[in-house]
Image (cartoon, rainbow, N blue to C red; front, side, top):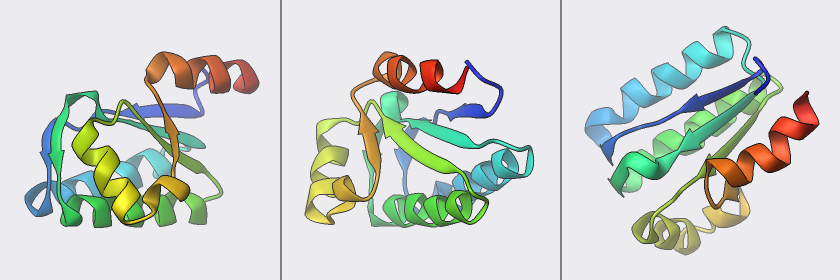
Amino acid sequence: MSSDIRVLQPQNILDGTKASQFRQEISNLVDQGAKIILIDFEGVTFMDSSGLGALVLALKTVRAAGGKLMVCSINEQIKILFELTSMDKVFEIFKDREDFESKYAAQSS
């Protein structure tokens, strides 16, 4: 994978208690020059509105730096949250990391 691509893997619950840490991790990746950031939700069991808010702020941060933020491996609960808030139309969502890599790693090399 290209060095411009970074993967962030939050774990367990993404809620208000973890939102600021999540945003800081995104900011750090942007500061390090990441152009494409993939949030791999495989290890996330639950996300609430605070987690979704952090994700939207992360998207704004990445876009402001000229990058792209995508997500993969979302579970059914996160999928429903995305659909209810129309975030499924805002974020590029991949089935899993392999799906992302087949589409993006090839383009970036």
